Image (cartoon, rainbow, N blue to C red; front, side, top):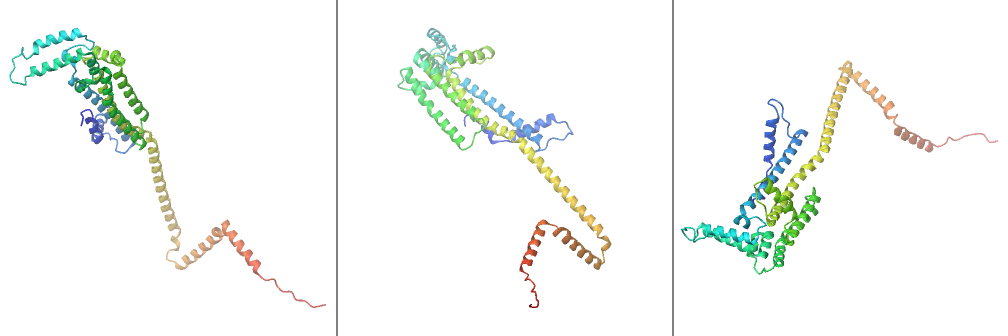
Amino acid sequence: MPTSLRPFAELCASAKKVLVALTVYYGITVRAGDPKPQPGTPRWIKHRRRIHMTVVLAYLLYTIVEVDYDLLKGGNFYQDLGLPLDVNDRGIKSRFRRLAAVYHPDKVATSGDDAPSDSIFVQLKLAQDTLLNPTKRFAYDRFGPDVIHWQHCSSIGDYILVGLKAAAPLYLGSAIFMIFLGVTGYLQWGRFWRYLAFGSLILLEIHTMTRPYYPPFLTVLLNPLLEGFTSHPPILPFQMLDLARKVTLNLFIALSQLGSLFQTSIAGPTSSSNAQQQQQLLKLEQLANENEAEASRLLALDMAPFVGDDGAVKDLRSKIREWLVQNTIRADPEVRDAMGRAMGRRRVGVPLPMTTGKKR
């Protein structure tokens, strides 16, 4: 696994670090003897979300520093010769002659075929030959040391075409993968900014590869800041592109992590409202149970004089039944309507009485 992706792979695979950081945070901020927020409470969820965001941003910063360290470790031909980026051919030849006087195998006592001076001199000679050739220097500044192995390239156009062909599969595959994740419902949060960063990276690479000058962002802003305020050496266009690719990839991973946290914060009030409603329902259920128990107790007190007298209890039950029928059942509008319809049918079916009388 690439070193630039290893920290974020560890971050995505493990959530224990967030819990450890949360424990440390409570150990520092909560005084001894005071209760700590319990897992699942709104305060605990809020603290966990903030610490998770801090961990994600810290890992993003760490990956940027790690990528930059790898670029510095790899170096470039200008650093090998100790030259500025705008050096001319005369300065290159003069610097190489001084270094050759020090590292030429004939000038250094060697022991064995693989002496360090041999490899150093070969590297210096390769750097000089590349930088003295305007076409190769243009290609090296934009595509890096890989141009040394590109065969059958004799013009700037040839190098640009090969460089675009080498970069096309990476961006085409990334675009298809992002579209697939968007269609399937993944990576919805921050989708606009993700596509904007991806498109900006493509435009930056095309602009850097095809222009005869360095990108203004590099010459006007980045390199002057590095040279004026840090000990960091100026970087070449190919180093800037490599840094931009890896930072963009890790930024996408960070956005996928932060998206779930922001969605959780948006859904937080709804979850809190649901929890409050659940607590209110539990309180209502408890009050209903208490009222039922109190009614049963009062009924038992009212029935106390009839305990042991079966006749009185039987008479009381009949009276209660009659009261229920007269005042509850018959008082119901639907029951009254049904009884009225039944009485009406009975009246219709009763035959009329026969009349008898004397004939006149």
